[in-house]
Length: 314
Image: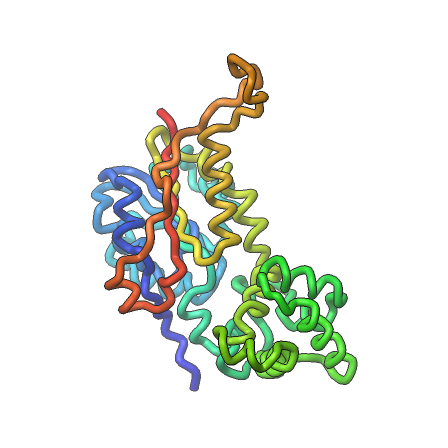
């Protein structure tokens, strides 16, 4: 019997909550509610304030609802993707937030629940959907994308040097029969990577699984198109805090924050700005905040975490 308890150690918990400068009576939005770890800590500091929690995962919604029961008078949970944050707040009659935060990537629960198909460590159906209402699964990508499309996503989203060979092995294998499980895919990936490389690096399937997951859930597009909206929805002095877990996410956050701080597109030799683009605020974290040594020892999944913070101008 598979265990479905939603367990998730909140990465950079106090650093993230502290970065929001929570004021009692304020309104805060958790865009990736998960098990409610960060949200619980925010609620402890809210006073008469309000928290809106957004998540697309049904398991997360249920778990967070249980965890946040003591704060039910100030918490509203909405099943959606944070890309729809503006609509969510409009529907709730909330004009702006004093803080918004995201904890990106796949949760411990999603990885540890084999049937969700996120992990390469157990054999299970190739699923990987963060929102179970999505009709498309990882198996659809693996079995219907062309060799060139598979190569592109494994190269770009997995940053795997053997992307071409992995794509070739997948296409060759599916001509025999559809690839349906994480175990089948993992064995194909192993066969596509030289033994000396497999012995030296981490798990050979890690990068390809990441790539397929990102493609299926549109993770990078959603992040890229949502940051400006979230900054615009902040009240003056409000903060947007985002935890990333790999370089692709971190690069997007860093670039969007920089552009929002200094959006001017005038040539550098112009004496004054004539483009009319106004700064939305300032980047609080010139360098990302990283987990402490203590956290790294307690939670191995925190090792690649980075926190960046942006503050909306007055």
